[in-house]
Image (cartoon, rainbow, N blue to C red; front, side, top):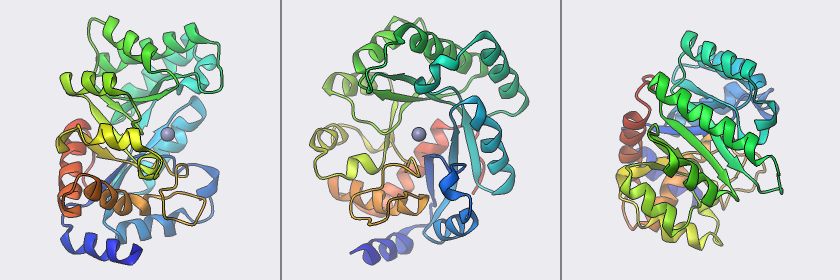
Length: 272
Ligand SMILES: [Zn+2]
């Protein structure tokens, strides 16, 4: 089954895949990243967006883009790191983005999954970074966990928001409605492939194909059907095949359409 998916995907695929969200500067890739990248390329994944999600991960993300053609990065402060947000961090991020432009600001948003109580801090970091994205003319990738109503409230209260991508989408009917009405995008990855993710499947069926982006969130969120514990960009064709089955269409169409979507959403995406 696994082999079949890969060969089918390679056969139809001229439009190489983009992994729009990964963490390849993670320690788990320290010893074999070159091999992971080679295998990923062989499977048709030829562009990657690494997420520099806190100040310690900004430079490693930029370094990866220097090291691998087809690699780009986004920069931001994750809601889980919102307690580090300060005027200094804000100024540093702004200066860095001017000097080394990312393809997006991210991942930013709100996360109360572990009972976090720093609501104001998270909202402030989120709002400031949405402003930064607007200032720089960049899209923003949203991380949202146990926080949908407040994310919606923040976004709706704003005079203007940058183009938005809801990474690893698992929103409700209401958020899906907002996304459809406001031309935002959703990231589809390992979470959606889980058999128990019925409500994600229901939402994904509501989106036209031109709203979907593929992502792995490597090394996290290993898709259903893989035995290994570390996710890698090699699982993108598997995710595409899953989406094709879910939406009753061809994997080749998912490949070409999601790549076009990535090029449209991330205007600064480098060539493969
Ligand atoms: Zn991530």
